[in-house]
Image 1 (cartoon, helix red, strand yellow):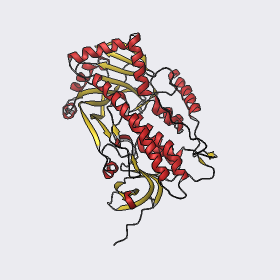
Image 2: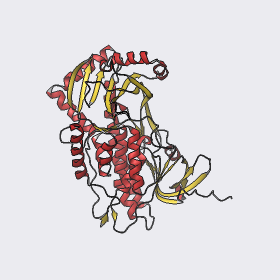
Image 3: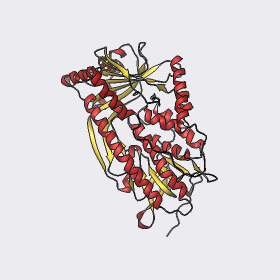
Length: 459
């Protein structure tokens, strides 16, 4: 039997954790594991991230960092980098119809101290990558997982890595995590089934010059053919301001929208959002997202796990995709990390398996509830036609009443904030500790973020 090909210099023969996928979910997990406290004098976990893309970005994903997501990033030490990269704080939601404002209110519920930011997805990836590399995480690009290595009894003990040359290299790992998107090869190799619901609408995404009367916030422009969402974007290189534009369109019409000339596209968008009547549209990066809801029936099998889009996909209407991925990462690190640190001497998988089961038992029901809530919101906002439009306008009016406001605040708390925070590791799981990387405690980080947000608004 021929011997396996040698492992390239960039790939270690064995690591503690191999993460397949270097997007927000995978890099978020790497940052979360690196930020864990560890027993004094214990070496940090060896973490390998495998990513097929040659560089950060280049994929069409959302830009919203809801308070639950921001809290994780602040805890991992990314607070200063967020605003430096151009993140914009979002405080208000405004609903419009036929050019008139129907409703304005706070988007972050009372009592939530973590901010809501928007930042281009590629910039979020770059921040996570820089933080992970600074903490000693090894990120290897232009490679992916071709298969899983299994030991006695079928337990996953590593990953078969393949690069551009097609040569496969084995990398042993105590834990393999699939964060490789909704077409996850790790999920497929584990044999995990997924429930899928495709929506009858899609989301056209592009950018526009920032209207003179636009104020930072989430703007919803209702229309019977499909609404329009506006969010702020960082300034261009020349200093000009812009906004992101999300137009609800019928599924299967990507070619139709891409085929419109500039004038026809501008008329179609302004017809639904009069605020953009005088704003120049930027077609660079224009994309039509096919929308679906997906949920894996299990997140863990044979000692390996999946998270992020590999485990669940939701409608972007609620802005939950990136938040759910980072929540997966934070919870997995908090529950499984201590077992990885404690069991490294004898390699016994029992404690790791218990921790994985606890993570799945916590995370999957939470995500299922989130998917149901996001689906309900999509059913309301995604409906089209004259009757649906009248109902949407009536719903906006209702939210402006005391009773409707109470319901709206409850929905915002459910979608945006942390309802079941994880306990900090206790003495039983983390004796005398030293930080894995210098990072501000979450409470101080949140307070510092508030100060920085006020400075942004003052500017």
